[in-house]
Length: 431
Image (tube, rainbow, N blue to C red; front, side, top):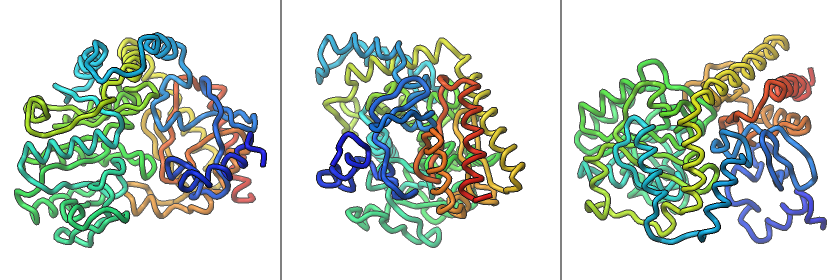
């Protein structure tokens, strides 16, 4: 076996790692074939163990907004490493990071650093329950908030029907406290609230969904949720792990002009290092230990290496607003090119796009929620994915994922992606 190749590494990995991967989507189960093992990345490119070069459209699921191995971030990490890797004690950078996040994110008055987006969402739910004295939460079909038990719940059949666990190991008791609504359906949310009066602690959602593909909120949807939560004393939580500091300097909440009570963050605030955070109104965050009774802790929270990378990233974004205009231009150029190719080939597929996030759905339906996303032709997507990979374009290996652009992509890179897209559509459909 040649373990210097992706195929060889995958065969070996399956002997020691469940499914051969450390996160399920990486296994290529949704598209078929064996996963590509990445050896290195720089700017807009990733390179696999077989020596292939790809233009990158995942960017580590969002954080590489400036492209891979950005020199400023590399320098910051290199400097921080000279002073040790972890202290388990307070550092100056933690304070600077908190101050910077509060200055950039409209809803955040106080913030607590953690180590992942999952940890951030779990902690936000806990503090919302402690603050309100209530047990239940509302989440939305197709929104992913990490692998915490409370979030792995499938929808029930109605407002008073409890959900069921999506995963073995999640108890029915946890499922009973999680209510699920269709995304973009205010009436369904109101029905859940009415049926569970004074029992709902929090409502959590991705303000722009990235985990059933890129799905945007309908006009008035976020405003309606804010109104319901205000009327019912429910803590509104925006999961901005993907959208925070990507869709604008102040995230989706700034872009849409809606202020949540709590916000969860990750990805970009670590500059590619493992990190997460949750923050919001001081009156809620003051319930977090040691100031308040809601316990949450972590030895590696505020890790000095992650803080060095994240501070460099956020300071750059804060000081260079032109990043966002560049990303807007790149996103428009790419999706306009895709639309032109789809029309040219006589196809009727859906492209959802906002800023530097997009998804091409293989369905003729407008994709506004999880059922419409699931109407996509998954077999065809798998063929298309491999055709793109063969043409040197590295995408997320699932129809139900958003792609993420970086500032490292030039017009020439984007034009190459557009050309590969048209060729891949033809090949996948054998046009």
